[in-house]
Image (cartoon, rainbow, N blue to C red; front, side, top):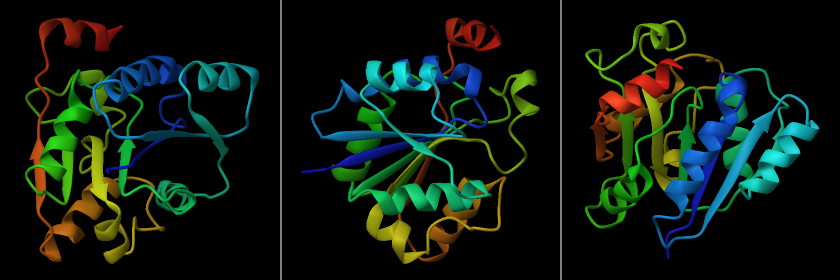
Length: 191
């Protein structure tokens, strides 16, 4: 059976964490596989504890400097066969986790990335997403994550794109897909 671990670093989307966890909870309910949710926080506060309890998530205090180090540390904490890294700044489309599960386990992709293409990128979002870090969600099989050595521990930005390039260089089957951004979703993201 597939076992997922969803890892969210709240540093970039602290104020949007509740909405992100709502979307993740909805996504988790669309698949039959077991899923752990880990949220990285600076310091566990009452608000975080309430959100974690509401969404059945585990809180982990950050103990590393770069995003690459933080994500690798979380990946090492779990035995999940599939690691999912989410950018909390945006709400993901409904069904994204079910789509990723089908792509990875029915169609044998090793990694799937939900990426924002330039035509759907909202102006305010470009301030937060540097060029090369347009990945909203990245799902990768643990064996491939470990084979390429995880994320680059020196990097804060563009870690997902870097990992995807290294996976492709090692002949992993990597799928990129842009979300269908509806008008309703676009207006919600601007709020």
